[in-house]
Image (cartoon, rainbow, N blue to C red; front, side):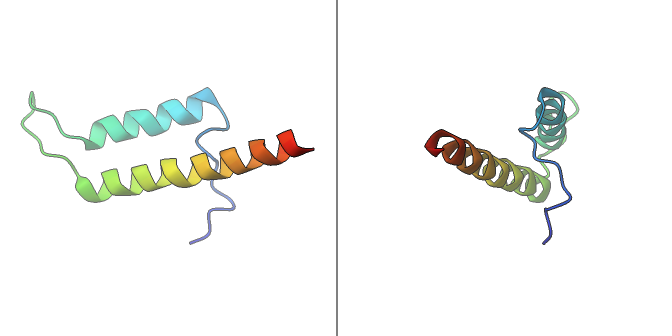
Length: 65
């Protein structure tokens, strides 16, 4: 899977907000009586972890310089 052309969700507050809204939309709702889309939730959480790790690695490298 090539994520090189995908923007990291931590690059801007709007990217992170877009990711969060998408997560909320896929968690389901007791009001509309819809269940969570667990497959999409898993993908979004994986995106968060991967993008966070990349961001953390870049920050660590900057601090070492």
